[in-house]
Length: 107
Image 1: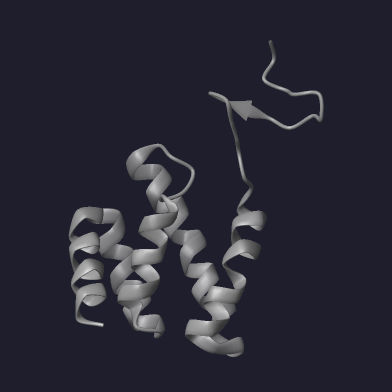
Image 2: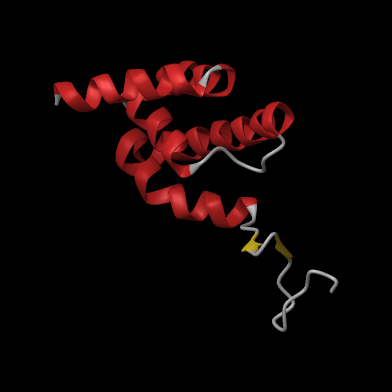
């Protein structure tokens, strides 16, 4: 089998790969809600860079959705916070999870 289903979609280990553009589109509304219309594209660009770093570190296309959600939560809706959260997420996602969980408990 060549990995292509009847629809022509590429499959790996039974899971269909989702492209970067589709992930960006999926995250658009959340980014606008947190960063506003003006900064949402910048936040999404940063998440794309984070995906590249994640791939280099872990060999996976993108961080898990839960890690992205943790980054967005810890960012507190500002780009500087998202930069710090992305760096923490790539270097030690467990510390990011602890920071996000602390915020969840306090709200």
